[in-house]
Length: 102
Image (cartoon, rainbow, N blue to C red; front, top):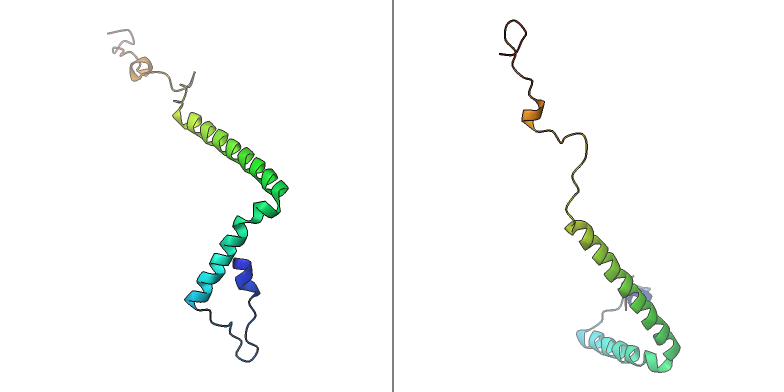
């Protein structure tokens, strides 16, 4: 429908596109829907092919959403090595004035 709107010629004298009434727009939309509903009757092979392509697209979209869901739902694994010590593990033991344990 957008292409049809772009193809409407402008008035050469005023440079404006002709005004379309609400009734004309409704009738054009109704004719477009009627034409689209009969498209598969006129082009059955195209409809079968596009239906299969849409089904493949839907399967891939579902698979992608599932992958994202699984990624977001999985808790992160703890890192090994750096950052695993508690504060008590890091604290140095207190030493007395003579350098020995208290």
